[in-house]
Image (cartoon, rainbow, N blue to C red; front, side):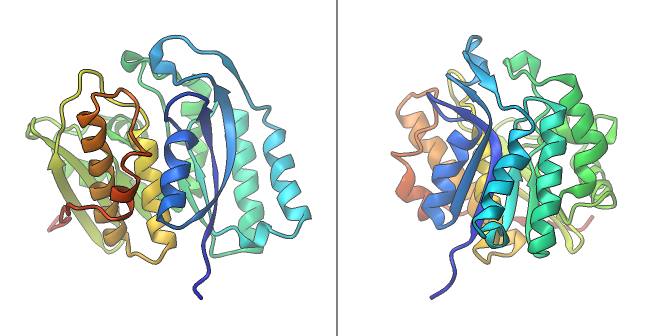
Length: 290
């Protein structure tokens, strides 16, 4: 019997709704990965409601919890670490310490960094020190980096002007450490308004993917967290970078179709769970000659 992969997911948690681990853990489990959730914050709901309660995990708790897993002899079974929303830069450095410890006992373990830098216009609040940590420290350690357009622009210190520019910017990040860069949402000038575009860049090439952009009264939160989690899960299950990319786009689209049908602000993960596992649609990633 093929071994089930294990993944340590270190990001935010909301009691109500779906963001961070609350958006990613169940879908990753549903496709066949054992997930160890470690919550950087526990909030009542995501911050785009404009009000929330909860607290940030003390940074020293992250290595302490990793140490607890090591004590029971399970740390070497960790195949990957996923990090997302951080409450402080100190948390980020604690995560990198944990990644180093895991890679010491399992050199094949992957680290996927979802570099959440916030979006004040949308109500996503991230401390400035966290953005600095991601830009200056995390990128060099990550095996996989999953920015959106705003974050890609931040990493490169300029705004993308075209798809070709996005490819060049993502490729420049490979030179800083990552094996793969997945841009979860492209927003360069001149793109078609009716499409949702994504980009995958590795040392082997660059792939562009388009799917329909669905309309919502309020855009659901947690789509990026869902995307990063599913992509990493499928890679751990044996997919190539491109196959994982295509599967993820299809599965996320299925979730959004269900969410739209329910006129919901929160992702309808439970209702869409069978479609996550077996998407009815397929979007082909087109290799770019760039």
